[in-house]
Image 1 (tube, rainbow, N blue to C red):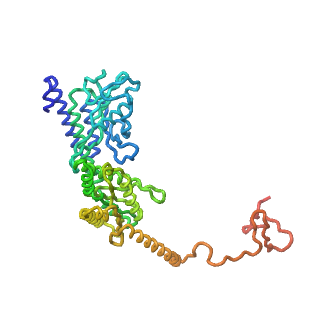
Image 2: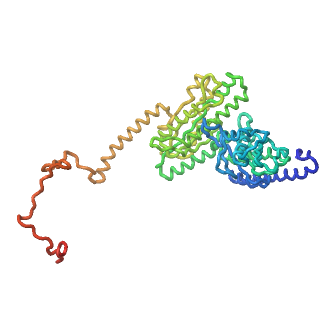
Image 3: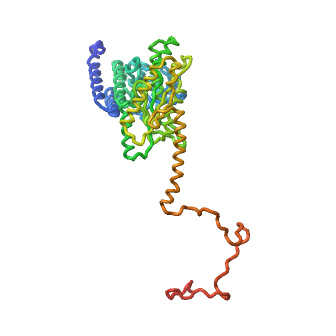
Length: 500
C-alpha cells in the first residue's frame, strides 16, 4: 500500500481501488479448495480484475525427454488449453527483440503470444507484447510509454514462481506462466503483477503439494501408503488372483555426494546443496518416466506405476499386475536410467556418480497393507543406517547400487534371487507335469488324440495323392443283375424319389 500511496493524488484512489480488488481476488482464489477449483477461480477472478479478454495458465511439465527441449509448459486452463509452450518458442520471430518493435505482416498471430509466454518463463520476467497496424513490440515491465496506439497489450505474460525453503537451501521454484490477452496497458499494475504472480504460484503449488512432492514431483508419503492399502483391498477381493508388488529404494549417500563436491571443487556449500536438489529432481523424473514406460516381454508396455517420495531421498513405486521377475526388471532398469542421467554436479567429480539402491517386494500370499508398509519402512531404515555408518568410499561401495529381493521370508541379493527363481520355476514345471495325468484320470474321460501305440495299417492300397491310383472299391452286397428302379413305396406309403 505504501507503493500506491506514493503516487499523485489523482492516481491514488484508482490505484488503491485496484489494490483492494487484487487482495479480494487473492482471497477468493485461496478459499477455492482443491487444485481444479483453484485453477478455475484464478481464470475467473483474474480476468475480471485486469479487464482482459482472455486468460491462460501454463504449468511446467516434468519428465521431458533429454535432447528435445529442457522444459515444456502445458496449458492447463483458459485460452489454448491443451497446447504446449516449449523452450524453442523463444526463437520465434528472431527479429523481434526486447525493447524494440518491428514491422511485420504477421502481426497479431499466435507466434508473438507464444514467444512472450516462453521468454517470460525462461527469463523469469514480466513481458508484454503488442501488435497494432503491422507493428509488433516486446517489452519487459511494459508501461504506457511503450504503447503503439490502441492502449491494449496483445499478451501480458506473468511468471508464476515462488521461493521455496523446504529443501536444503532456499531456491526459486518455477510453476509456469499466467498470460493475459487483450489487457489494458496501465502504469500502476507493475507491482500488483509481481505480487499476483508469486501468490498465485504458491496457491497452485499448495493445492498440488497435497498430493505431490514439489521437488521430486512424486506423490506424498501418505498418498503412496493409501495406494498400498487400496491394492491390499483389491488383492483380498480377488482372492490373491492378481500379481503386483512394491519396488522401493534410496538415492545412495547424498550427504557423501555433497561433501565430495565441496572437497574436490571450490563451488561452495550453497552450490553443492543446489546440486543435491538437482539430483533429487532428476531421480524423480527417471522414476516418473520408468513407471509409465516399462517394456514387457510379450510386446506390451506397462504404464500403471504409482510412485511416491519416502523420507528425504527415498522413493516407493507401487506396481500392480507385474510378476516378480518383472518387478526385478523394473528395479534394474530404473538403476540404469539413473546411471545414464546427466546430473549437473557429476561432471565435477573425479570418479563415481549417482546410483540407486533398490528393494523388490512382491505381494505375498497373505498380503496386507500394514505388514507390507512395515517391511518397506524397516528396510528403508536399514539402508539409511548402513550408508551413514559406512566409513570411507571403499566401505560405502558395499551398501550402494545394490538390489535385494524379499523371498523365503528374508531379503536376498540379486545373484541369490536368480538361483532361487530358477529353482522355483523348475519346481512349478515339475508339479504341473505331475498334475496333468492325475487330472485326466480323475475326470474319467479319454484324452484327445489317438490312443497310445502303433497305428494299425489300412487294408488295400493307399491313395498316392492327386493323379495316383485309386483304391479298390468294395464289392456291393446286392445280388447280381439289374438295379431296381428308384421310387418304390416308402415307410408311409409315399413313393421315394422324385415324382415324374
